[in-house]
Length: 76
Length: 446
Image (tube, rainbow over the protein chains, first blue to last red):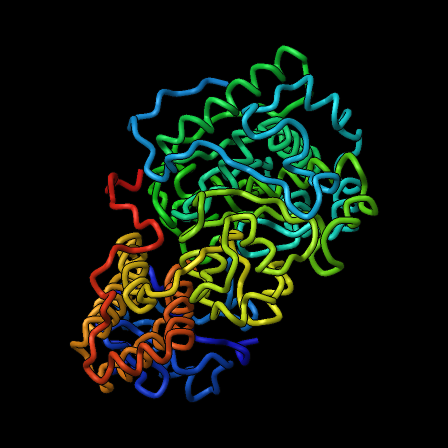
């Protein structure tokens, strides 16, 4: 089940604290204005999932989440 | 319908000339704008029914099937299949709601309000058809605060329909702040829930819209076509348009034309040269602005012989968007114009998402510096990189649209860009903008 998870930033919640980038630098970069930018849109490996979970837990704005692939784009 | 007094007296997007419309590619084929001339104003109920007859008795899945067979796609910009949206609302749990999206937010576009003011019954018929398809008993007319002319046309039409005992959903009015992104579907949901008219990440209105009721939000032109599909059936409806995009389409002519805000109905793909001929343009302009402020620039000479039609433009990599066809004249500075539009889009950002809030302003300023000859090649490279970093990172597609316009600007006005980046300012860098850039009258989002 957990094999097809992707990392997602809620752009409305992200306040540019930048902690995620320290916790999962291989998955998240900060843009020119300090906001989180996910580097990998494909499902994460088990190692990547570990650091992604740390970033999700460490975000003070609760802007990061791990969701099943396919639920990526919820827009209508 | 209780028409609430508008809190602000003045409409922000009001164009000076009230309503203009022409019929193109043959009067016989005109559909939405067939009937009385534009000068006659809103068509009354008896004339409307006399021309088009009564709606069908179809409802629910049968009706959705007819809409699916018609191939009708949304006219609000995204071109989403209407039957698919209606069906999602129909089968989702909860008491469904229909929203008639009258909030035309593109400053240079006039087709939606022209349609509402000339053919209110066609739009309301469409709302009734949508309500029948999804099983809704209520429909909200979502209007820009201050758009009194549209409100009056709709109000009078609803009164006429009540008197004639037409089977309609209960219509109510919502006055939304006249902001650029307030007409985006998740912003509509949020506003109707009592919140701010700002987009919300991850909202699927058709499944969980207003207070999580399945909500069918449709553009007014889409609803007008839906009314026709209901009456004429799929085969007749498909006799207009192309296999990939059925029915007629409304376009607004803007910019350096005789009457900015002129609305034309196209019943088939038409060469840009023919369409612009209607607006008094007889030779290729410098460029065309298509789709809206989040749309694209097309080089004037290559656009001249190409066809204006949603799927034709899409094949060329351009979005038809809201049907805006803007003429950008020779001698004007496309770099300066684009920076003005980006600056407007930046001011209309809801300010919720960092990349949009800070990025758009940055792009606009950077481009303005370029036009003035104050930025070199290094800043140009940085501009391209920053623009790319913004794409796909907003709760809505507002920033993506701005970047789309910027990218087309860098391509179409490439010679100017090259010259400006060698610190040669544009001679037209300080001239007035060609397209309207409304200043913010209302700061509020509620």
